[in-house]
Length: 279
Image 1 (cartoon, one colour):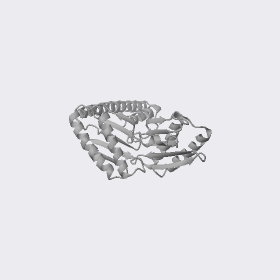
Image 2 (image 1 turned 45 degrees about the horizontal axis):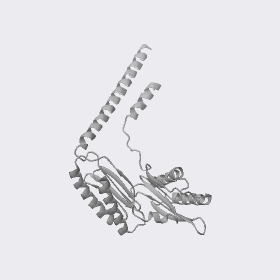
Image 3 (image 1 turned 90 degrees about the horizontal axis):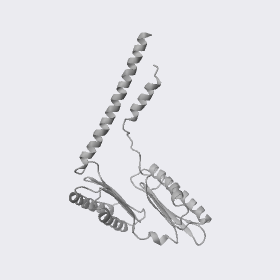
Image 4 (image 1 turned 90 degrees about the vertical axis):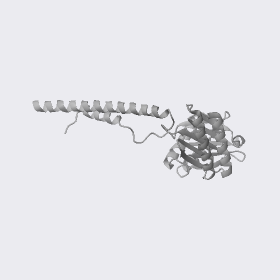
């Protein structure tokens, strides 16, 4: 059977309108970065490159790794990476590989830097800057859109935060749960003690309440931990109608595309049959 170029093109167009079965990962999305203004000399740059190679090699097997590279007898660079516990080893490896590229572009030769992607982060520092990362201060926050019904939402989030703080205390440093209509998550630095981890998450929860108390989603990053939450789709009053509207629009567009392709194919087949009849 022979197919014309038009038939093939229309068939491909039809498949483009079909929904994807595997959404694109956003683990490699840049969340924030901090770079020291002071920069390395050439010798320190070579050591940093060696440090990156160690971190990348370890990311194929581990989700957390810390190491130190000596520059000379008096100076060393320490660094670590950590991936979220809910991503695969392959995704972790890909994420950490991207960290080096971003660091080289955005924090070229800085004596200390921290780059946070959605699925992983890394941090390196010299002895001169090591004290700066020991505090548990806020590094970055992102607050989502405000909620319409604040009172009900506040009650829901209070319960969700209690569940999160209880869960992280009885975990190995990572905890995520769908609590009613909220997906909430926390993770601590890989070698942080349980008590320190719990305290860090409690601090992050406090920041979340104060800074993003009326937001439908939030990400709070401290030096040693982070928390994030978002409302599950169509789970709050007012959200369902918007979600259904989007879904209806997608169905209409998809249906119109399918009808168009169907008519086009039928017309082409009829044209082919008529041509065959004349021949």
